[in-house]
Image 1: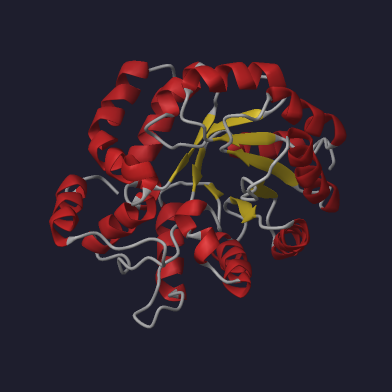
Image 2 (image 1 turned 120 degrees about the vertical axis):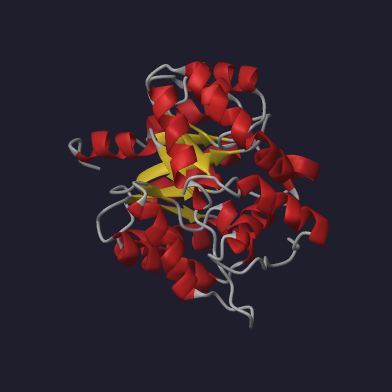
Length: 303
């Protein structure tokens, strides 16, 4: 990776990192028209960092062809107006192939999903990410960390081997652990992205994060951008005002170990007439009572 490109990638991560949903048609296929409409709405609102194939995009429920198409379609719709951070994962050959495809499709970074193998060693975690990062030296690489047992020294070691590891999506729900991990790995060495969205953004920001991921941004881009601006400018009281506004919505998403994380976002979009509510198993649509609750929460939110 060339040095002039590095600051631009770091800037892109120090922002609202949007995780677009993947709308489905009545027959269960991906609804590309609705997908483009969701992306266009984000772009028109001023969102400049997009992650196709994130968890809010139902990465693990998509086929390989659908995942590839998601990256292509996002790059087409963005047309250079946004930085693309493509989600990749599964076993090493599949992740590497996806990273190479993302590079060729126009992505600038890849986000490497937390390995789902039941037996993950610290050194093996480094090996896994190193294999992917080494395959795409011209792309920025962002590990997605959900493992509370991972030590900061593992990330520091990865960074020693792979200078294209430029940022970290940290999604362990523990602000104190995040603060310690970031400092053990190198607080100024990486861009730290709060990977648990707006609900955790203020507390993680106070410990060193400069960006946060968002699924809510699909529903109300202006709300997410308002929190970003308040945090950037040190207006923490204003950020917490936004936090209180969205708290019920985000708590619905986080309940029952985030069982309805994607479902609530799609239900909100359905209530606004932007896409269908369907999700793929193991997700499931909300019961009617909760559908009304979601619609009431988002009614009147600025888009």
